[in-house]
Amino acid sequence: MTAPLDLDKFKTKPAGHVIRGGKRIELNTLEPKSPARKRRKQFKPQFALVPVYWIKELEKYKSAGLYQLAHCILLEDHKCKQIGGEIILSRGVTGLPRQTRAWAIRKMVEAKMIEVSQTGNEAVRVVKLLHTHSKKTGNEL
Image (cartoon, rainbow, N blue to C red; front, top):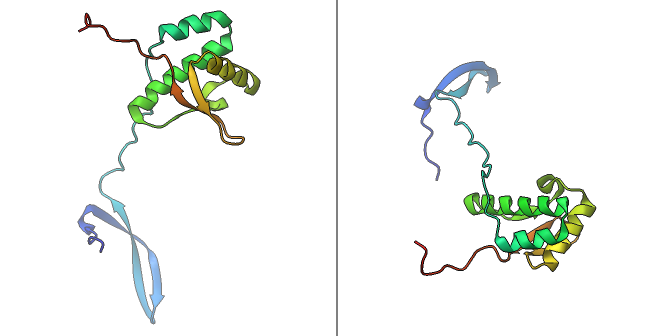
């Protein structure tokens, strides 16, 4: 059962009329008294932590595309931790051409930096980030 509509929250405005059963019925449109809620700003990560293991692996290749993909993955991971979702490595997200992106993903998988999955011709999805956190010692606060 639905709750009754509280018409006190709305302003009415004449919108014309219809004829039903030989009687003229005036139509009104309802407008809310308060403006609609503003949408939140889109989340944009301000930083991302780069694991030392990733830095050492990326230095081996000296590829700008590989660096760009790694940074993109880390930023998307930070964003997913804040608002949820998954990391999808599409052209729109990475900004890399298809061949460069495919090569960089392959190198990152070989270096055991990420685990990925792909169904058919869909964009590659990162399943797991590897070597992303350091072991805590007893000296840390």
